[in-house]
Length: 140
Image (cartoon, rainbow, N blue to C red; front, side, top):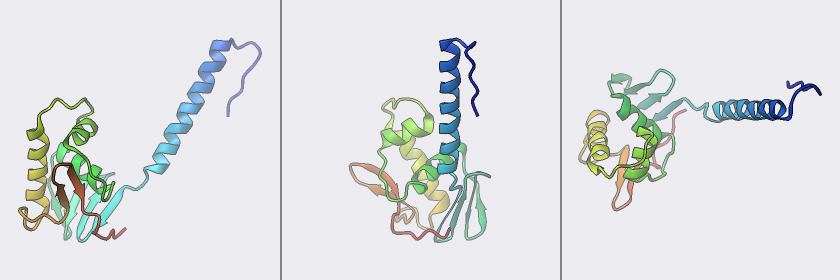
């Protein structure tokens, strides 16, 4: 609720309105992003507790590995370039170091895939980037 009086200056009124709009946008974003648990063929990702389980067994991931996995799994089938992954996860402009993203993807595959050389969860789209397998059924 917003109450404005004639005693408020134009600047104060504008600041109140902007504050309310920002608060509403943040609340909407929280509701929109409420999907916190993802499950795919035995792989469970819990964003609230930042945990990953495969066949009910806890998998230890680094902060960055978890961020990459959640980004891909929460955008099922969408292909992200190395640059996009870097920009989103590191929250800074891509610096041109392809190896850092590829290294984290490789580490993730070692931890979550049965056969990292034939991944079923994180797929490479040659010449474009990476995606989470769109053909895996979501269990939640």
